[in-house]
Image 1 (cartoon, rainbow, N blue to C red):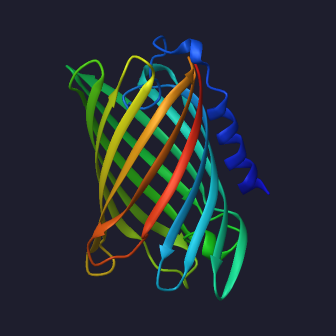
Image 2 (image 1 turned 30 degrees about the horizontal axis):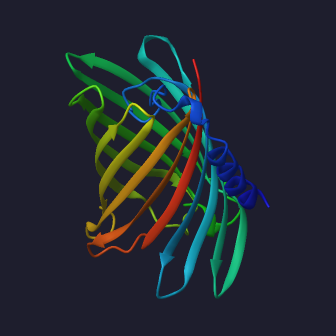
Length: 249
């Protein structure tokens, strides 16, 4: 039921877009260099394994709090459903806790963060079963007032947890390229390289694209789609997701 409500809520907000705000809205919350307080609801459908007919449907709730001095933290918890011919599971996923620090250097904005993942998942199919300490580094550069590019690297490390679950030593490397227009629309490309260092450095290259709109001065909605383009790792075949973002200062 929570999964259905997440999708319905997203569509309801999108349909309630205020046409009078056309040409007046300013895109907020897309550029990682912005240190904002916001709440997001993030529904997603992913085809994990086409051959085995495995899918995961989720709704993730994310709260991000901006602090003084360029600091911030966020909390992220998914509700998910795992579907396969062998059986289905539904419940909560792993809890993510993150801290970050932003540093300005000329036109560049540098971001460093640390993430702690707690294995709170209701079932093994909904989480990694491992405590993780992960590290994030990013650099953001504005090409213009409407366009930015960002490089983001994230390293995943499991530090404890169930011995029966696989250890995690992975990397995710992304380049974000986004453009916005004065009417409040934005367009984003997100090519990603995933590397599993624990298993012979197998890799997957994927590409996500996103289109969004500020439907209120402090509310944005978006749709995203993407999938695997190559590599010898099939961590996820393709996915369709969306989001609604409520911003507070």
